[in-house]
Image 1: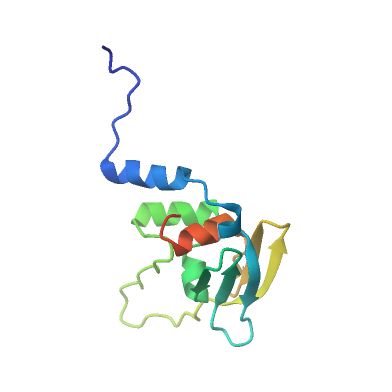
Image 2: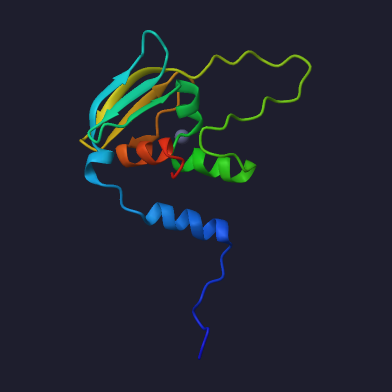
Amino acid sequence: MSHEGIRFISQEEARRAEQRDQKLPPEAITPAKVSVDLTGGTGVSIAWKDGHRSHWSFPFLRDACPCATCHEKREKSGRALGEPEPAPATAFPMYKAPARPSKAEPIGRYAIKFHWNDGHESGIYAWDFLRRLDEGKA
Ligand SMILES: [Zn+2]
């Protein structure tokens, strides 16, 4: 018996890979209603076709930006999706306005994109990603 070709990965890695591979049913990743509270600033709410409801604050979504640059930054600092960057250790930290989009736009039928107040706008938030994010499986 040969063990060639078997990759040894940690249990945690295996668990995460398994969750990512799990296909979510179409009703779970199709929004029935999307509300982006640009004026009130409370965040984004989605009512999914399967009856589940999700809500995220804008800063959380900004810190969970799925674009390659933000993904890499998080990997390097070991931050989880939605986890804020630690404030720089200076005596007089600069005031940073809380993340908020000036605009949100649909990307086809599968995603939403935000134009953040810090000028960033390369993240495409797919419905599938958002539902997994809500369930801690992104
Ligand atoms: Zn990004």
